[in-house]
Length: 166
Image (cartoon, rainbow, N blue to C red):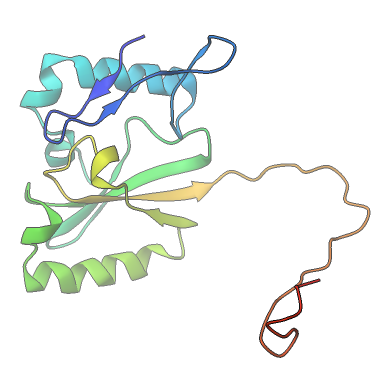
């Protein structure tokens, strides 16, 4: 199995062997999508062309666009798009106008998506082009629930420091 190596910071999304000798990898993608993603990252085109720069917008703003993710987190999401800065630059170099609009864009998307996710530097495959992931999360069937567990909240009013929580 190949692994993705981020040339900028040296992080490798390397396969891990579990106690049964099988390879595993940390991913929110299905195994098939993750394999396609690794293939793409290993291709010479990956380092030469920025998909975030060239992808057509689903929705366009003055400084930002929303694009479809080619390699979605399909293990957990039914829809996975990205909010992308129009110019190829990092978050540290955003202008005041870009930051203002960024907040507006994020607010606009709350009705269409369940989650806004930003990867850490170690997980970013394109760390030099600021972007966020926006997801609509899959619903999971849990089966019939006979009795809902009681929620317990601990506050100073419900127990003292000498008393252990129930």
